[in-house]
Structures are given as structure tokens and as C-alpha cells.
Image 1 (tube, rainbow, N blue to C red):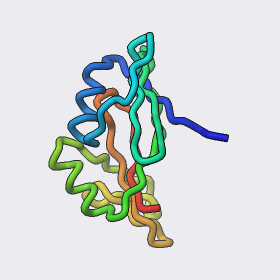
Image 2: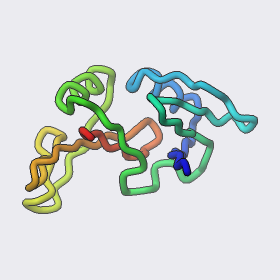
Image 3: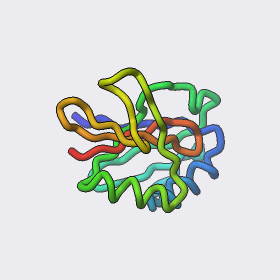
Length: 122
């Protein structure tokens, strides 16, 4: 079995530029409808045209990195803006990064289309 993330975009070219600039990914394939397939490591994901881009208020996809602080700094240097959340003592970001009571650290940014992407260490 394989599960593939699909991310909606109201502007495919803007999304292609964002994924290229921030995540340094280029499409590996273009579908007949103009959708773009990207690949990061062994994972492929689809960015497809949709009028509903950015309407999901939860994490749409997660990016696993070896060093969260380095990845956040690198993505920020390329224009990513990390979200600030405050849902109480156990779920509050500080400078864009959440540290859970168990010590897990995570951060969230939005792509050019408003899709929420999580960043964390595996």
C-alpha cells in the first residue's frame, strides 16, 4: 500500500514557484490537467488545481527533517512564514516552534495556497 499527499492550489504556477523556492523541489511530472507531481526522498505528492485551496484548517502534509531548528531557519531564509498557535499550556508555539510536554518539537508553515505544512523530526 502507498499513501500519497494531495495538496490543492488555486494558482498552480504560484504553488510551483513556492515549492521550488522554499523547499527547493521541482516537479518530476506534469499531469494532463496541469497538476504537478513533486518528489522528496521516496515520497511523491501532487499539487492540483482546486477552488478549495487553503480551506483546510489542519495539517495537510508533514515534512520530516533531521534538525528542526536548522530546517526552520533555512525555510525562513527562503521566505517561509511559520505559524504561531496558542491552544493552552500544552500547545503553544514560541517563535513558530511547539515543544510538547513529551519533548517533541514541531512547527507549521503555510504554502503559497494556504495549505498547512507541518515540520518535525521523525
